[in-house]
Length: 484
Image (cartoon, rainbow, N blue to C red; front, top):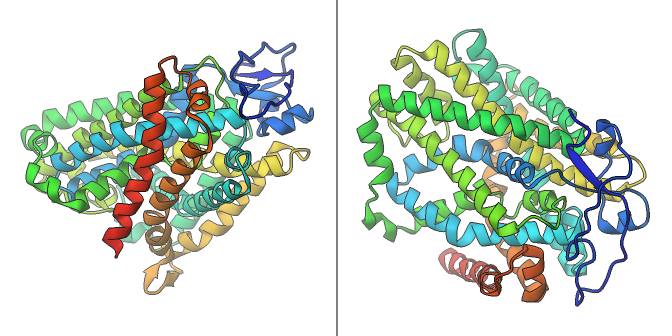
């Protein structure tokens, strides 16, 4: 890796009040480093602006806007677009869901993501620092986001371990049945291997994330594009296109479809989970946040649609049910590959792609946790923070791994993983995301948000801020009325 992957700002600035221009990023504060450090030393950077001003560590920023876009897109692609998106499309009417999803991304997720990234850039710190700098009550929201992300990571890493196990098994021989794979201790072993691999990448700090994303994202798009072309040529392309792009407008009256679409839009862009705030904290002043968010959303949506084009033609050609549920990737797809006579070739390619996408999201989720820990132990070294963060994820994730093993741990008749996912993975994420976005948007004047967003068009900044202020409250009210 090159020494210039991550740039450092070595001269601390004095912090001004919120009514003035924020000192780090409302002026061009990114200076060239006076000296070069080894790549390994770039990991010692997860500190807030206050820590940098005390001389404990220099600032670190992404080496370029492209590096930020690729890294942030990679953090969101993961299982959300290759596993969850096709599942929800199949269960919610195909084209109707896709139409609702596009609306949710453009009018809700994009402005929300812009506010979160701008908040991270303003604080130049973790989720805790970004919220804590806005008041004591806001600090509690930041803490809740970090703890929720830690709990989600604990079982997300287990599912990512399954993708690694399937990739290895598909490469060595036939793809195992899911019941067979989870009947022994493979789920535990691959979960721990995933934790170890994430630890290795995070040891190299921002530069490690950049290097991984620069290789992974183009490779993921190219391989997925190749799979989509193959599926459209050999599968039932007409039925798949009809299913995906011909919405039944009567289904737009179904609030279940809208709820699923909004949930997926939040999930795929990692709204309310601390990813965007953490990655935004390394964003230099010269980057236009709105432009970057549009690029990130485009990449994420493109990957999701390509996943649908790679999966559904094969499913329809094999006469398989697209509403198969969450085991679509692990059960139906291997059967669809085998039906085309290309199972020995396609299955390893798909599952290695599947693992790399899931792994990228594991890195982003772990970064949220380790960055928060790093700020609390700023003099002890960031590698200790990485070990503590990944140790916490591994400890909390073991019950979920045990629940899909010979040990068969359960809570209320459900595997621990399913119980945690149903308890925290949907409603808690959406509720906390809406609350945090609204709180952030109301915490600062529109003029300050305009500078942090990097916009020269006042009306566009006004639109983003007011959408972020009002839409979360409206969605929370709708959800509360439906709950009652």
